[in-house]
Length: 592
Image (cartoon, rainbow, N blue to C red; front, side, top):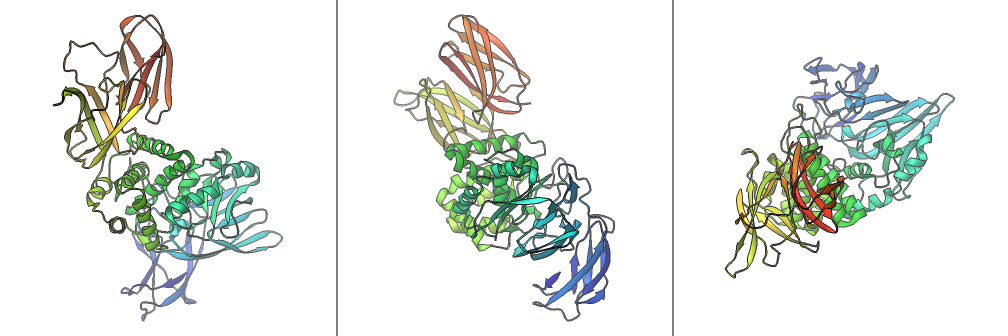
């Protein structure tokens, strides 16, 4: 290790981490010295320390050599699906740079002596000697290969600063698949049996890189690299560990590859100061999946992707907590769904709040200002406010530093305005727990479905915990459905708990279709009025428009009740009944 003092070495001590192996000897500037075990010996909170030269000062450089032996391991409590550290599976020896359960999070210390903290970046040069017939791949450029009758030694050099948790290696009989150019190599390493499927799965990789360069700025490293490993995915800098099963899928959309690629900007190029700021990596990479969906499917694809992430967050059983400095104890983890899915939707809301131009300008400015360095939540927030010229303290306060999301009880009613025109009113009441809000400046896109099947949309900004709005007079009062947060403009982190129609004159004709109760639980009924005997088709779709249920039923003329047994998870859905070309649609909520 080449160590540069960047601060005054007041205690004259250099610290490093190494776990699960035996330290045999330590040298400082070629002189043998001792490494003292510190922290709480025998626990996860342990480290080694070396006393530096007495006259050490800022700007000094010295060299530490650590000889160690043993079998490399992974985090205690890891699983077959993920174990931070070093794992051997299916003939592949590989590393994953973080653990989901280890309280020290960064797990490079399971194979490499280093100060294993994201704030302390390092350049990297390594030689890997492996049995002939296999090859070791790692970070940076392959600068040399040597072989004899029994071994192959590969030399890898990465001269750009890298957080230790982003260092890696993988060993197997790999074949390089090339997708890039001499200006920017893009290489995916695959075992022979998987090369055809891997080539198919990564066929859009150059387009993916171009998409992110357009949004985030020039790709920051010397190569784009992926390697197929039994588990993953993990955004190791320039050599992403990627699950072989996903490469075998031949899925050309490859959203996981997009997620990990985006990390090369968010997390690798600009690294969080510590793991309290991990949302600065995972939220942005998850949001980038939606950017990739927008590239492939337009803005509708982007919104649908965000809707899916919102549902994932609402259904996560991990507790409710902020994006910044979240708890890690079960049912949470080092990497909970919150910092992925909630964070992605929050970034989508930030994009809407400041507009596309300022949003991406701010991201590029942030990535440029802290290039190859570290940042924290405060520096990101300050950069965004400086670049946009907007006061966004309220936004970051409620969406990044506070927990939870908006839950709404919505009631519709109709009145006559001063011009004698009948209008529809919507009352929004925030019902989330008191320690989660109230939220303010909430954009809510409301859609009204006309009899011809077309929608009209408007956006209200909810500033209070109880507020009533009136739909524009050009919106029909004899609409067939109302949608909340499903329009063509944005997705807001909100959940409709109930949507109730207030009937001012109960003697008026009963609605053609009602869902009872709404919200519903395990079972619910349809109160349906049919004009004639015959068959009808019931269809249930989610907020993304995906069909989840379809059934053909027999109905009779007049009012009737139809019982449905629910297997849906909590969330918002649409139910429609179609009979002889006549369709009735209602929105409903499931609460399990």
